[in-house]
Length: 245
Image 1 (tube, rainbow, N blue to C red):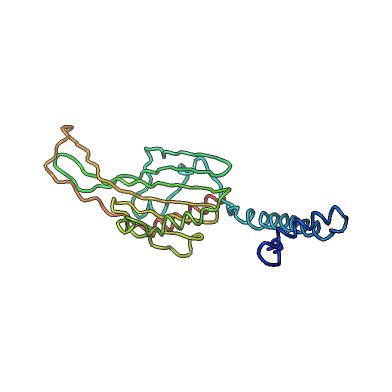
Image 2 (image 1 turned 135 degrees about the vertical axis):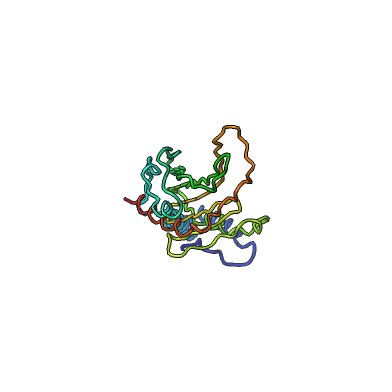
């Protein structure tokens, strides 16, 4: 890096030289001072150019071939999750939201899975419902790396109350897997300027066969989603490949 030249001499000498050089220029004998000033200006220009070339451009995220697909969730197979939990619900359309901007493209959508029985009841039927949420962000101006690390390695106040994420090797640049207390498991990956998230959640619903809305049976426990972490990882690889096609 090129730096501006430093003045030599004792404290206050710079001010004295400024006055003397001014009088020298009037007599036509002060040729060295203008060169020094010109050198300092040129050094500043070169330093700024170097900072721009190697600082700003290098900070532009590499999207690595990722692109947004408007009907992403409509075509996403989720084969591993379908085999481990339940296939996609054929009677429900995936809800989707897309935003495009010169700095950031985003898409969010949710894929409901087929209901699974949670136990038969005399007056109704309990079932377990699963939803897979998909989020893709393409950062085109600013590197998402530092913020991604901060969010997933937060050690601030209250962080000890949140489930600690597990690092997932060999998946993008950085990947974290987290299971929360509200029966949801999240896998988030950063690969260059792309940040991708898969989140599977579960809840219990009750279908009343008699229509009176009452049951004497207790509500079943909501099943945990932690056992499906390997399925999330497998389908994340499929999502990453789909967005590069």
